[in-house]
Image (cartoon, rainbow, N blue to C red; front, side):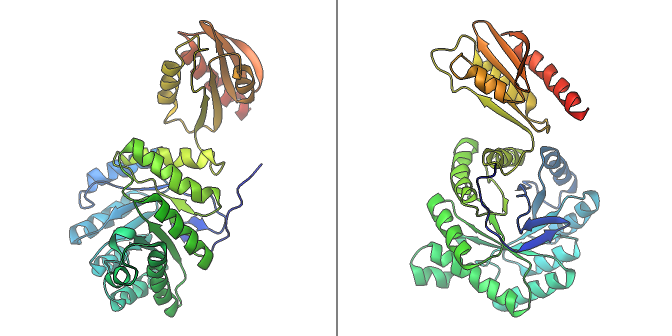
Length: 358
């Protein structure tokens, strides 16, 4: 049963990938390598693709990066976004290099004339633009007007550049309003959703290392998604970008907005445990992290909720003293020892996949 009613937005397409208009929410990330280093960047893109990343953004700050982008375009079919700051000419070069989407920051791209040139180039190539507003780099006149970054200032920044796009009859626009301050980001995205129907890219910028960044992103992105706001997401972490993709999918799965990969249900642990469930759950999570089968696995530690949760999952174990009962599709299929539980569970996952194929 779907409990979240998503806001209806316009739809844009990035190399065949739909964003907005009720389409599934893509998870994206950004490479950490220098784009001019084609080999290193391709290795990262390939790892991101294995993790499920659906859209990859690459920085294009100079001509070497633009040349690298052109070569990378030849080596992957993933949608590629060119990230442009300061030098609008790099946006023009990125279009020629084969970018599928251009991201510009209104606060540092320059004059209206420069924005118009980018729009004309993008429009002629049939590509979308992401207007990426960041609280940390708002236009100086907006800072002077509002005194400091506010939701109103961020939305006004986006609105100014939407107006320029509209002057040219250009509507293939995605908008992001990001801040490292979670309440500010939430408020700005809500205000934008009240005023416009363009698809929104959600993210908490500079969220931090994995633990704190995951929490901040879950609160910021998750709050908006639960309200039906958001059409694509990036979880920004100071970590391997593959972790951003993993966290992004977990976030969507927790709200019933994606089903990719294994969902693990496990006890928070308490004094009733009679097995080392923390070790078992950690090992299972590690062994399943790159498996993209869609199923739910329950690891329960005692008789209070264990049998019900284990039976309600695709595959589950309800542990007791020294071992547990194994469930598949709600039925008991055997017993497992504590020491052999993880290996037995992995075998059962393979059986489950073959059974459901048949």
